[in-house]
Length: 282
Image: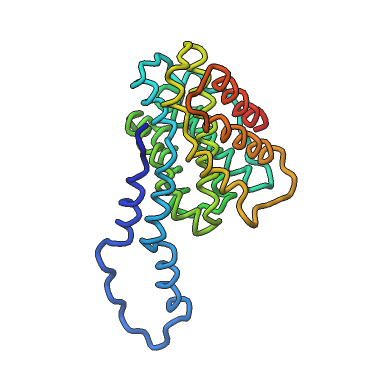
């Protein structure tokens, strides 16, 4: 399966490696905050840190990649038509759960953006912005979403172009959210997107009886291990949370399934039902 998000590093390093800032005019009494600003910027956009983040993010296939992989496997099923018309709210306290919810909304946006009514796109963008704001997303992320929303409302954007922008949105989110909320945020957003994608892909394969394509499309043990690491991270919120608990249970189930040499029809059923068990709680 193709890997995306490599544009993330170029996007962020471009912010690091642009034209040098002009030397400010000397001031009689420099403010302490101005002295600290370069260190903050260096911490936020450290190239080595972002290189590591890019390599981890690139591990996970995006929803758009999942659809492309279905097409390449000659599975004649559009995931967009399988997306449920639901209103995923962000009025919860647990930030792990908010991150997962944001990921599901983002996946639904990416999969339906080419054909959905603009009112539906705008509603999902508003919900995504609300969730990301609760997670500590800064002005770059919010302004990106606002710009998308404005262009959709004004019919001033090509849907193919908008799909590409949405598919790359996490490239903008990574430095912002990791700096503001912690390195666990983006992986859990990805977990939500991947969970929705895996549920839809497994459902599509079941509908068209293509178990033979399951290994290539769904057998991803490294991705499952990646998500488990962040769900079970040291210092994670251990307060009871139904969604996060069910996500942990589902990932452990998928760890066993994806470790098999070849996926069978019953494994496809397990992937579909276990991912759906989390989604029904949102």
